[in-house]
Length: 208
Ligand SMILES: *[C@@H]1O[C@H](CO)[C@@H](O)[C@H](O)[C@H]1NC(C)=O
Image 1 (cartoon, rainbow, N blue to C red):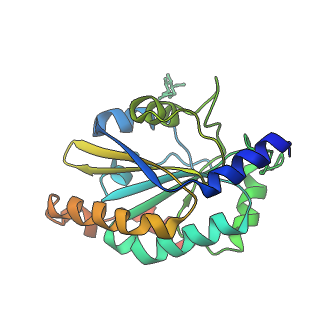
Image 2 (image 1 turned 180 degrees about the horizontal axis):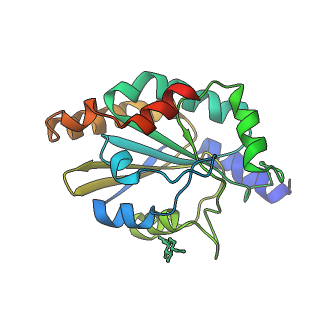
């Protein structure tokens, strides 16, 4: 791992949580996410995922902290409509060193995670994933500097999504913000979507 990456990750840990916000159409989000696949290569039912309440999107590496914190948050807030999409990423000091999706999945299995682990992607540069490109472009805030540092939180009601971008490592700092997004989204959703998760997504949550 290069010294520069180590330094940037260290500074990132120190930075306090800050938010940028923008409104996007649900259709834009779904279009940008149309080819997203989970770690098993299955296409994600994105229109359903984004309509669930709030979706936490972040990039992760094979580190204990990342998976443990996400698994805890998922356990606490899944039933309130939180969906977590964790994207393994190898752009920061090769923290997912050459691992295949199968190897990543094997590593993560030990954490008993219920959240959705995605296929590995780039978050920066010419090969950056289209959803990440859209979110970075519309929210601002520049490139992602570290794994588990940037978190996007789309929260959709009917066809409009309020999207926030946070910089900061700690999920406990973010939790009140996420709970607020879930509460206001469920107010305007009449509860119908929150209680009827599709079998495939519910299945993934149970099985992983
Ligand atoms: C999804 O894949 C299709 C077929 O390769 C491609 O035409 C389309 O542009 C892709 N969508 C995005 C958002 O990248």
